[in-house]
Image (cartoon, rainbow, N blue to C red; front, side, top):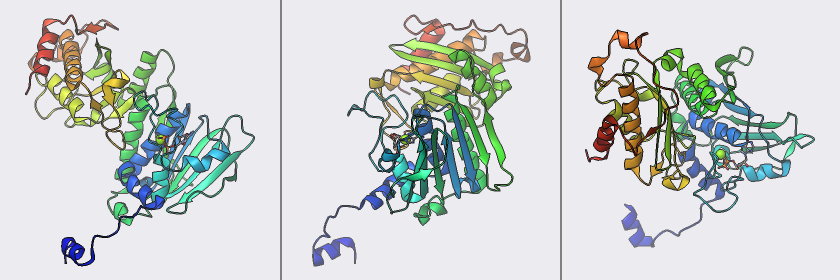
Length: 396
Ligand code: ADP
Ligand code: MG
């Protein structure tokens, strides 16, 4: 008997409100896909809290344990139960969804994690005499905060991820693969905050922790610190083979590094894109990169970039994806044109209009470095850039 027949027989089933626990578990399905997404949410929270040092520990690729510790501003003991409730956030002072300055605002990450795992939230604000913690597991809801020991900052411990949702558990890959996804996620986030120190450790065997990532805080000017961080993450090879990209148009600002065509990859995994400081994987942006390198690279090669796009808050909607991995631009053509124009311009300035002009000599001492900090104005474009922008704007 199908649903329709049943409805004819007995009338439609009554509409009922989902319990908070079920609603949280459904929300968790979107926010927490795998250990890497849990780490993303927790590290973003640490960054939002102004942390200078963030330590991530994993056991069994995150399935058994994910622990993120920070030295940020902490959470007051009496606010701990609220922090793990859904739709509770300290990041929207009013109901303005346009001027979002931190990573978070949906107020559902901790609640979602608590719905699908065992979550312990331990925190101590700088002005508190002691730390406190709450434990939430599956449907139970937060118990009253109890005293705990720790110095200033916050530790979130997530144990037995997806124990409450066995279907999701089945989709997890090997501990190794999940651990690698976590590392990739953490590297992306580390690029957004060069002044913050990050570590990732595998503590599957607590007696022999293994350090997987160790990124000390980078000091200096913002540009210098970013370059040091990119070098630490992507290797000196990348920074040596990359060109500065800098462009501005209508309040859109693009900066970062784009590698020479000779330093390309067989897949797009080394394309790091950020919009207003947020790591994104966006088809529009990926397409713009492909178009930017199209004359310089064979079809099966991908440019290596770390690009940071700053746009006016009202020009972008970051609330189109539960994990905020995608964004929607009000004027996608402008963004696309800016990226394509800026990269092509950088490549052209390095004397590399097409792959056929690339020779070993160009990569060595003969290549004169492009002028530092040159702002390329799209309103007064060079021929190359005009062509690029035009090509970008044309429907393909
Ligand atoms: P959101 O980040 O969208 O606000 P979360 O569920 O991730 O939602 O976190 C809820 C609230 O808990 C945050 O708004 C913040 O006030 C607090 N919080 C979470 N993690 C931390 C942390 N590491 N340091 C300080 N406060 C935190
Ligand atoms: Mg959050």
